[in-house]
Image 1: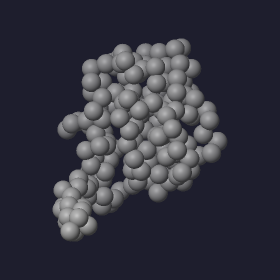
Image 2: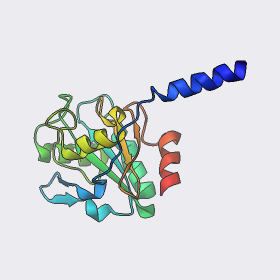
Image 3: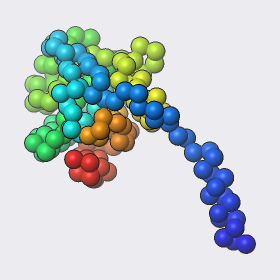
Image 4: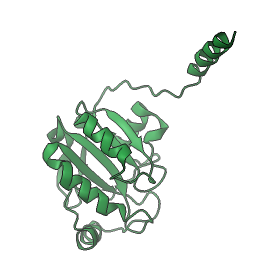
Length: 181
């Protein structure tokens, strides 16, 4: 009887699991974004790479994560990892001028991984990349705050997402990156 109840509960719980549509009419490599210096970053150039997308902000309590993002980039770029910073003012904590953000990142954190222009990451005005991630991976792909992380696998699909509190050099992120590199 106990086994029957456990099986019934397990089956019942499956009906309420939050599953994204994951149609993947497009993959990550089909998108582009403007870089912080004005050139176009064509994600097609990142094919067969693993990409960690992080929405960043200069005035956030999590801004110190830039140090770990740079360390992650330095450790894994030769193995096929791209760290992509997406400065965003969606939470009203970012500078308004790209050149100021770039200077802030270089002077304070010695950042040399790719950065996009200031970009909306949630809501109606969100960049298509973030709308695509939500559509294919569900609500966990929507940034709830700055330094939200979206991990893209070599097939150009969302592998996992990580909340702002999850540090870039955490075992959780490192293990996931190493498993898919």
